[in-house]
Length: 109
Image (cartoon, rainbow, N blue to C red; front, side):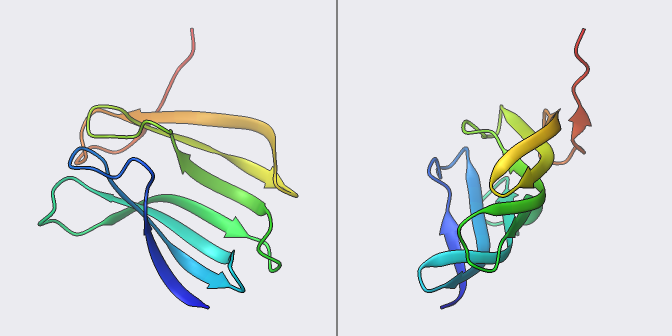
């Protein structure tokens, strides 16, 4: 139980991403934030996240998630909604070229 910080699956020098939130009885509950930093000597900044239900078994509501290959040269996030753990409706894709830039919505042609 309590607050936790987890490294991302691809954590490395070029992908400094962590997840912060709370566990209860071995399941993620409540708000979980996704944070990243450019270099080891810099603070982490929130770039996404969302909510798990009170049972800790599904994502609910609005989420901002990172791509599986998020790293310094490939910074892509997805924004959209979950109902009962299932993605619903439109999900927007945003990207940025550098950590100091804001994310921009990708325009499909």
